[in-house]
Length: 429
View 1 (cartoon, rainbow, N blue to C red):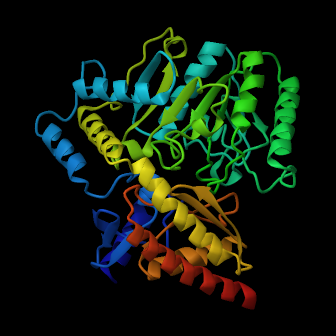
View 2 (cartoon, rainbow, N blue to C red):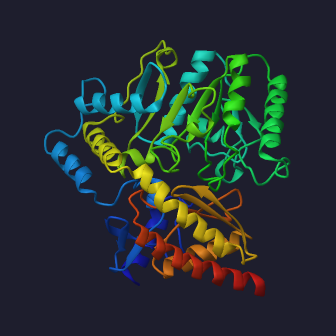
View 3 (tube, rainbow, N blue to C red):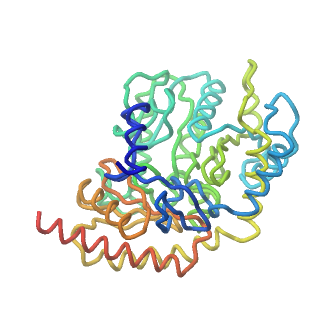
């Protein structure tokens, strides 16, 4: 038995059966540098998934690793019961960047915990447990966030402390409004929202929405949908939570935050973030206007949120992102990559759709089996990608934002071969 096979056997013996692993023969990644990683056998891969959009800038980025090592050599942990300079400095930068007036920031250890906190704040502020969420959504794996997740593949229980009402509009290319123009799609979705509110009992706390759905397959509504929703929400005093765990920090290229594609009626009341800001360190958080953030009337701290080491990493990572205009790079490199993949897909019946923005690209295939074959084939050819969508039929492409044009071309060449192979197999089956 090989060393990796032995490790896989030990994994199955001691970890949950529902803890998913990619690939028929799972991969042990032991080293990374830039946009590349190496497995335990020394094989190199071009990383087009970044640990689920988490390695945002680059693997082993010196600025981040030096910040982590330097802080770890001084003190690892204190908790939020004590002042921490890095936490204050990072909060100041994020509050300013968020676009939310009079913003306050609370740090967590994950996107799940960030969304959980946002739901706590919204329901406490509004004195209601009713929440609006989008169909096909994903917001985390905690009890409360599972309860508002609109994708059944990621929602293992129907029990929830919240009453969730699901709204149309997050998926432009499927569903009952897919045939409409963008303007009519938005109008129909607004009518659906108003109809849903007519069925709610009393006060609704908040709408939570991903500007681009991550696990859902990088699906998105037309620009301006959530601005139109905001007009309705404001009439009812309902808060808007923008889940930026996957879209934040400039990944879409066009905007620093996903909500900015829907900015006509102002910023959200709350914004959640995680993943990329720590570049692999466990950092998440919530930004909210002070009135909402300060509404809790009981004690609340975070033992591990805002730790000195993770805050030092986040601050160094954010500085690098801004100083090197990685949002602009996502636009410059991601745009041609998206168009290249669309050109390839045009002649392949097995590819239903290529969608996305910046370095957040989804390739919808004809079946979950086709997506599984593509995932394996890409790995065999030295490229790591992700998979998602309601049926698991979408390839997710989200490399670190420092991806070079040459690396984008390398990945696109592999993906072209993979998609042609999958299309040929689909035609035979």
